[in-house]
Length: 67
Image (tube, rainbow, N blue to C red; front, side, top):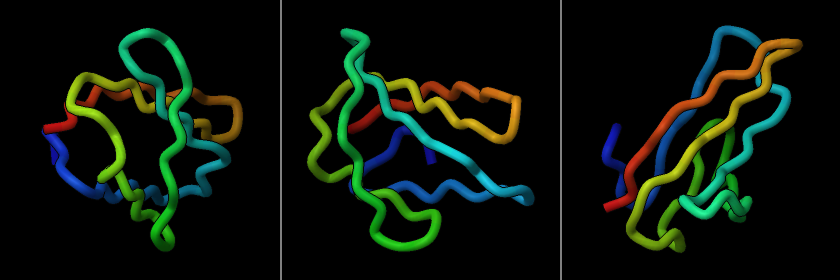
């Protein structure tokens, strides 16, 4: 869901190699994995974030808003 609250689920039909969360200032932020594909975002401050997802040679960037 976007905007997100305390957790977000990211799934894919292919193996996700890496996920990086980046805040509005360009810094990487620590987001813990609760269990497979579910990320705990409760500790993130309200604001806009980029989620960079690496799948093989591809990079997917999604914008999310934390409420």
